[in-house]
Image 1 (cartoon, helix red, strand yellow):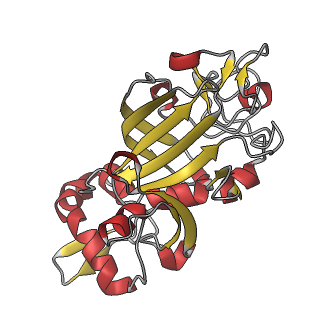
Image 2 (cartoon, one colour):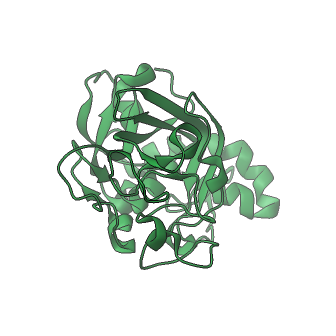
Length: 277
């Protein structure tokens, strides 16, 4: 997907970027057009409904708003569905007014400890089972988080049953050509903040090293993640289920359990910032 925004003129009044490119890039990277686009960006969704005839909801928040209140697996059609297709997601309709689209889940489901120690291609396309452990796929996460402004919520549980959470009010990623660069900010919650330091990090896997460390952080800490140099969180690390002697290679979240404790359960989920719930 090119990041060059080809501009269409609608009724000679509205300037919109094509649906294959996020409005974020059009408003930030086009210089003189940014002033125009920021005033017309609110028309993007309406134009999509007119020109694309999208057959279903774009995310779990819209499913919730349309009256489905049970957590489970649903099919969604993101705003650029004619390019990426539709796909199934798991919707959390219970936590904090519901409407959350899960992008990751870790837990005790009899998978190997290194189930998330996967290649670039696996993280690109996604793997796992939606009602168990899974990674939704970086291409899908890109499609979802570039159709509006999204928040990220991370819910965590330790082996003793204690739970914590973190919420970030900005979360989106760039496409594969830009190595799924992460934009994350405004994080808080009773688990502390061990994710803001990933802002502007590129995604790294064992077969594609994009981090800033001398060695491959994914190889060192056994996951695929937005490693920088290297991590304060490792939510795709080895499933070691509690205390471990190895350094920082479990499902770690430093501000809560530091680097020698692997969380028992984690899920990562997103929701539009303008969700009414």
